[in-house]
Image (cartoon, rainbow, N blue to C red; front, top):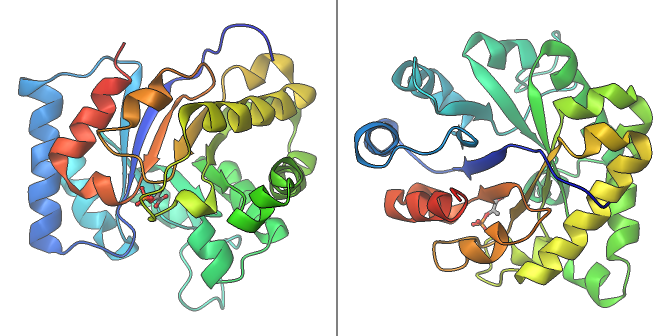
Length: 260
Ligand code: PEP
């Protein structure tokens, strides 16, 4: 898609299955002090943290009144009822979550979540007023067999077919090649840009104007040392960071790469 991308920049920290009450407190306090006194970030860059579900209440209290947004790591496609272990979108909203991760590759692989279920989760989140960060990405085998774009399409199409075109604006996409997540083997900037441009073109086929406003994040072994590679790409609107988001100096440097 040619033209100016208007999407806001998001720096999202996915804590995964990490943290404890004291660890979370010190990380969030460090983030809060970085956002205010030491290194105010520009308003077009938003920080988002995704703690494990049991710590959302703690994070919500600590982040209250700050510019740091809160996200769930997953959400049910159901509103309420006999779904033991699940958390609904309205519950996340009660604790002031603004975003929720949906379809992370660890959920797809380890919990056998299908593209249809992920579409239903994203839709449930949007209907309730959350912004889903929908994760897509190919495996190494997909990439090596040349089916990256086919896989990305099959992951996104079920959701796009459910959405009113104007609702695209309420969506964030994260391109996370599975072979790059937690492996230390990140996609280089041009590989990420190629996938992001493909995804934005797909969105543009649904609604050209909205596609320019959808933030498309890169995720997969992002750290301070490689963040500027992604910030330099025209269709990369931020990053979804796992391991490095637990280290305040790393998270801050990653963010700074997107401040320009
Ligand atoms: C992730 O959890 O989405 C992720 C990209 O992890 P990491 O940065 O550790 O590769």
